[in-house]
Length: 252
Image (cartoon, rainbow, N blue to C red; front, side, top):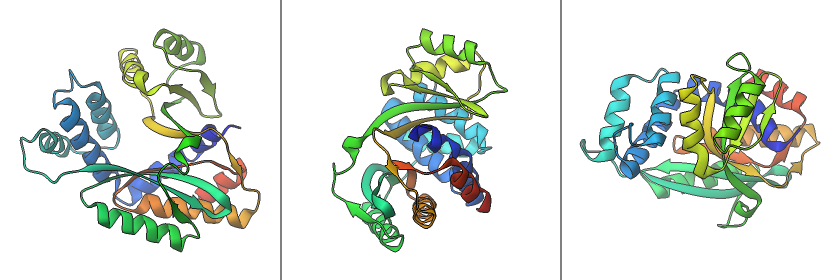
């Protein structure tokens, strides 16, 4: 199984963890602010904003929170300045990590990421040390009860998305970053709701982790990084047996 498909296996676990920690509203609010700042607050003319508003609805985020975040982004309401940062680091076993951060305090974020990596047996790497091994892509996860493979494949071909991969419980569709909004709109027009629609970093090469203890350390470190308030997402190039991934997720 490919690395990005294994990543998809743990996507539901991550979503559940985020929701349990009450972090998801904070993450979406920052994304809304950044997207409204860069593309305007009118969802009709800002496809990325439409996608985020749908994401907020799926997370049961109150409408007033969504509106407030958008207005902070456009400057209609006073708000803090949010920046997007990218950190690169290593987990135990030589596993590479790309850590996306949205923050109003760069020094705090850098300190927390560095400390969490160190405590988890990893370390922060220099800019560019790992990013060459990851490719930025659009990724859509769609439950199999929402559509069928033929319909989804046809939609992907018509809207310049990449291959459709059928997993046990869902379909995965990848796209170029430039086509992300286009395929998002196509799904909306077809009334197909994606469980997840994200821009992700997918590894070009994987690092095999066969030792069970090392694998658990890697997964625990990723969870601890995800727990940080400023961390939006953590992407990795681990290759861990799916049974171990599922067993770890079930314990959390």
